[in-house]
Length: 163
Image (tube, rainbow, N blue to C red):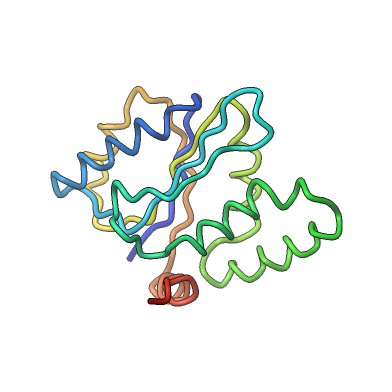
């Protein structure tokens, strides 16, 4: 079963450093990264800079459509206005069947702020104690949403890239 996790870091470059750590953990067979994306939010910017991580996953399991929708809900749509805000609620509801509920979205919105960064990852087969040890001292905060097999399948089917 895969887990969709958000690792929040207290610095704008923390997620990029964590991406390097995850790549090393994956090389050592201590975690499997199916897909990943980053949000870095330097002080003074209106919103974070986001990107899908191809360093960890190649093409990625979820693809750009998923990350675009999730980042839109998390960081951009709430800033556009009330009319679009209602649409954001509908989009958030549509992700709930895939294990991403309003509480998850609100936690990320509240915690990923200017001066911080976040690494969003879909992982499985983690050797948790080893992964935890590698992130000691980073002051990372883990916000996660565990996906059931059905939720994982729904997420992958909904957002897989068309060839």
